[in-house]
Image 1: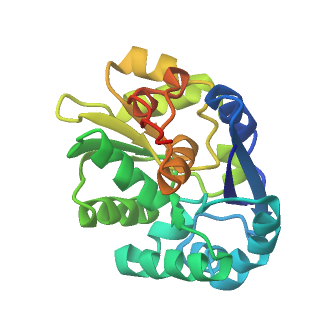
Image 2: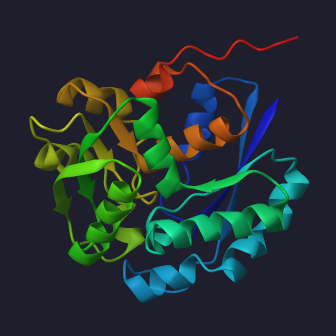
Length: 244
């Protein structure tokens, strides 16, 4: 059994995680601890506070007791808002407090893009323009070039959490273009786990979404690869051969 831990801000699309756990098979467990988000707003000052060490550390002990082997801060905006160096510091502090390998959703996007050999991507964000621009800058720092950006201008995670298949597909289509090798949808408040196969079929290219890459990143931290085609192209790599 591989137990993976996630610090998830508030309550929006956390039901993506039991759905993904079911698709990954019986030997992977996804444990979620909800962190306090304070004010629900995609605003830089609020996001910096949401990702503060105090808020993250508060959930760490519960994950340790669950037997988690790695922990991921399951929040994109609450990590990339710190910039590349700041987000690295955030992850290092989380690893120290948890005593576990750690990462965040922002780094998960960069690592997943590298896994698939992607250099040029389209970003369909739910955020306002200024927050979307910070995500684009983060991707560039990681060697991934956003060739098109779309900012939906939604202020609260609660509103994002109400979006269904049609809204998610419309967002992906709005930002797609011939130069983009993949579509990135960077918000863990967005329900996407049920839509991945159809999104990739409709768009004809890989689609990376926040909760999907967050789980993949936790598996990466524990040296696990799982073949789960219902979770998109990212999960169709052959599993690692287990020694012993």
